[in-house]
Every structure is written in structure tokens, then in C-alpha cells.
Length: 250
Image (cartoon, rainbow, N blue to C red; front, side, top):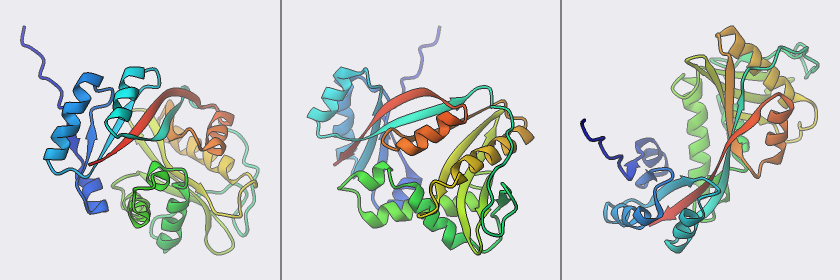
């Protein structure tokens, strides 16, 4: 029997590196505590400036090792799954000039700048926002680029919005792969919260997934984003996994 090839302890992240302007990498999730120190030293000697590392909340040894090595706990990453997708429900929202509950495709409508700003708002609980060592402009650049690449089809298959009187008042980015849908960015414009727009985006997302043959769907958010967690749970999504995320600044 051929021996399995060992997994690398870390990988460079070209997209993040280009976006932030400094070398960025990801440590292997759940890397054993004994190997973590060696991997961090390897990153440092390789010129990496920032590295991410995820592990499970019950990995007490790993969490202690990360802290001892200078890792900063920056996030609780929560993955939600709706399996199966909930049944369709009746739209119940009217916003400005939009028809009740009518989400539209944002591609090519000239709303790019507004959608980039909504993307930044979507990241208000992001680890890139809450990490005090992370440059504020780097955080904004990341979310602007995320939306740009979503609109060009590189990071999403669709960008849906609920139009207001002039500009969109909410946005969601969606992908469908191998029978599973995923929600990327989702945001409601500041001052428009509490009007059911998030719920309408969830209904529109479910409709979009079902039309593409998806039997289930997932979304990832931050544990600190209580409003988002409550929204997903109201629409039939259950917690599938929690991970603790660390940043290593080297």
C-alpha cells in the first residue's frame, strides 16, 4: 500500500496577498499543537506577514498553543446548513418602487459603487474589521474586491438586490455547486434594518437555489453577528460547525 502524502502545514493565499499588499497564508485547520510552532516559524522565515488558523472550540491544547505563540483569537466562525431547503414562502415586503418581495439581478445596472459599500457594511463583524492590527483600508479593499468579483462571476453566480426608490437597499451573493447553494455576502443598508429585508433576501435566495436544483444550502457568519445568526435560524438553517479563528502577525 502506498503511503499517503503528508498534508502541507500551510499554504500561501495569492488573492489575499494581492488584495492586502503583504504576504498572507493559511495554516492547516486543526494542525496539531506540537506542529503549530514549527509551522509558524516556517511562515516567519518564508516572509509571511499574516497567517490564519482555524480549530474547533474543543481543541483546548491547540487553543492554548496558539495563544502561547502569539496568535490572536479574532472570530468564532459559524457554518449554517439548511438540509433540506425550506419550502417556498409568500413574499411580504414592499420597498420604495420595487414590487412586493421582488429581488432583481444586479449585474450591469450601474449599482456597483453602492453594492461595494453594502459589501463593506456586510463585513462589520468580520475578523478583518475587528482585528486592531489589520489596516482599515485593507478591510475595505477586501470587501470591495469581493463584491467586484461577485458581479463579474468570479466569486458568485448571482448578485440579487431589493431595489429602493433609487439605489438597492439590500444585497445577497449566491453560488450553486453540486446540488448545494451557498450564501456569500448579505447586507441590508444602514437605517433600513427591521423592515423584513433580510428575510426577503433569504426567501429570494431559497427560490434561486431551488430553481437551480439545489437540495440544501449553507452560509458562514460570525458568532458575534447575533442578528445574522437569528435570521438564518428563522429560515430553517441549523448550526453545522463552529470554529475558532486566529490571526498570526509575523
